[in-house]
Amino acid sequence: MKTRELKLGALARVEGEGTLHLRLHDGEVTEARLRIYEPPRFFEAFLRGRAHTEPPDITSRVCGICPVAYQLSACRAVEDACGAVVDGQLAALRRLLYCGEWIESQTLHIHLLHAPDFFDCDSVIELARVQRAAVERGLRLKQAGNAIIELLGGRSIHPINIRVGGFHRVPAKTELRPLAERLRRERDAAVELVRWVSGFDFPDAGCDHELLALAEPGTYAIESGTPTAMDAPSAAGLPADTDRALPTRTFDVHDFGDHVVERQVPYSTALHSVLDGRRHLTGSLARYAISGRWLTPIALEAARDAGLGDPQQGTVCRNPFRSIIVRAVEVLYAIDEALRIIDTYEPPAHPAVAVPPRAATGHGATEAPRGLLYHRYTLDARGTVTDANLVPPTAQNQGAIEEDLRRTVRHLLRTGEPTDAELTALCERVIRNHDPCISCSAHFLDLRVRRGA
Image (cartoon, rainbow, N blue to C red; front, side, top):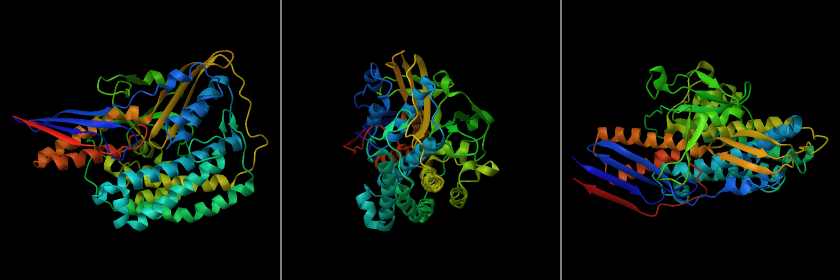
């Protein structure tokens, strides 16, 4: 019998600090752990005692890549607690702002973090030497997303114009015209992006996880919706790589904590989550499976041409290696949706609605680029936060990432005797497929392999 251990000192091209520990024994995977080791950041703790108007500005600091997701999830939870409703053009502006974040975040992941894997490159700098036009196109797309956030949010990193109830200031219609012209030019670039990534070489794979995403009939859910879960293939007696859309169930966002339960694992400073006691996955693959039929015509056509199946005909994609294609389709969708919102925009009479405090608990969820993000706040009668809970996508996805590691490495072991370098490269790809957002970008530091009889 032979035992091998693979330890990746720090994960590269993911946002945050984590390592992988893989143990193999007699040709089987006996342990696969994604260990997040950076210190806990205690956001829930220092939200307590703050005014109900403060969570959007505080929680935006959780992530510099997707601050809008945290701001708008916080707004929805506080507004829910206070009984305030943000609708009409204010809601449309929030969706437009979120489209900007989807564009910039997904293009960042595709080009700077993920695409180098498909060209055996260590970084986007190396990728630019062999795919310069594609990288330049990606940077232009990212800049277009940043431009939306800067216009509506006041700046592209940690926006300052977002507030509970709406915005501090809303744009005039004329301010959006140059943005629309830019987005129309970049829409063709987004179509080319989908074609580019669809031509990558993808291993055959599937994922036997329940899928979880927000759903809002008639539209592709971004800034609002109802939590919706799709059964895992094994529940229907099907293989993990089946392309069939399976039955779904919904639950109210107020009951999120009853369905998605967090637990501490001894090897990680991040919590793991289960959905009704089972492993689940949230993010682009889940959104496409649950809401793909509501993509705009141009995005749906691009998805079909890229080989992602046809959600309108009940077929979906469960290959995690092809998630990069889904993200590209979502970039195209976000541009198309942003143009629709701009074309129908009329400045609202007021930049925000009143959100008077009251003693209550509020719940809010939105679709961050990496998946469903949930916030819960309890307020006292003065509007002071007495309790807070944030459940990010990566905390929900860690169990699915570890299972995909086990499944993929097991398959590789059955087809040959991979070297440590081959195992390392494969494990990196599996993790980056899910675009884990831990906090900020890191690099591989070392690789230690211990072999023993």
